[in-house]
Length: 152
Image (tube, rainbow, N blue to C red; front, side):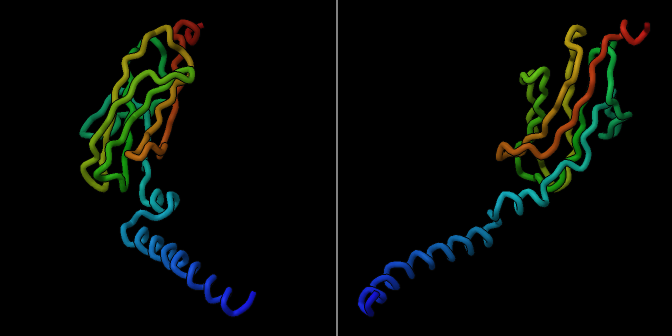
């Protein structure tokens, strides 16, 4: 490459490298860093199933519920998700059975959703906690069992 070609290459490539540097600096300044860095402070501190909520806290922790009971709560303690709309997505056998959306009003926010279950829908249930960008930030599952089978 002669001197003229080198000078031309430098003039063409230099603005692109500066543009790339400036875009990275703006992302860092605006807080829109990589997904890994952005998610570092955003998480679910607790995610539990419970039979009731008392004083904004779960009254117990359930991993199994028999179908002689039809209501269950899902409680999540959200950290660093203030200002977002967070969703509890209830799933059964790979199908979305319902969603509850919450406006998160602060850096720590406790929310819960309730589900009335049909007694014939036994098996494993999952709830995913989805942040405002559609990322799964937490999940939990419980087993809904046949009360008649557990009595034998």
